[in-house]
Length: 174
Ligand code: ADP
Image (cartoon, rainbow, N blue to C red; front, side):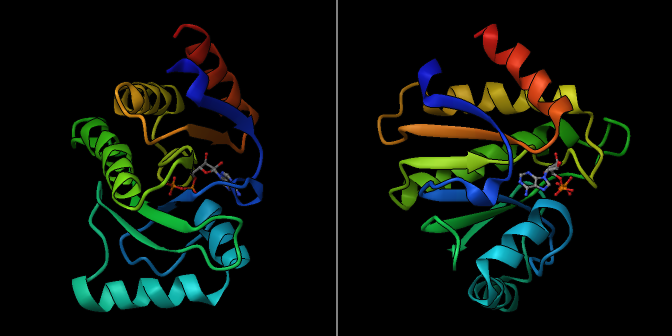
């Protein structure tokens, strides 16, 4: 199980996988950070599909996920999930972050995805404490792939060194 998890420091748009997870916002219309990078490199096809989903179901709720084409990215799909904005830890933030990982995996499995890259959801503009977010990510990823043969590789992609160091310590303990 442990050897399926791959820790990478870098830009999620540059890594070849079946599905790239995007830390989107509820509007699905793009934003800053990783969302901005994915739409910038992926091109307008991604935004067009997001707009269609928004027209149909009014966007995406916090903790949920939707799937689109990956446009010009080196992937088949982008899975857009909406992380919780950190308030004070008493607004269900941890459970909602866990749901982001669970619902992203659910869509990945339904679409035949074998390799998937996750960014550090909610740890940028949404200010989720990085250590807490990493623990939730690792535990949830671990549980999702434990008895799952379809998923061959899960990349945890850290853009910042601080997150990378936190994950490295956590993953060494697995
Ligand atoms: P959120 O609103 O969920 O906090 P952000 O995009 O602001 O989303 O940040 C989520 C994480 O993505 C942060 O840790 C940020 O450093 C990281 N990030 C920003 N750009 C990229 C990128 N190109 N590839 C991977 N991770 C990125």
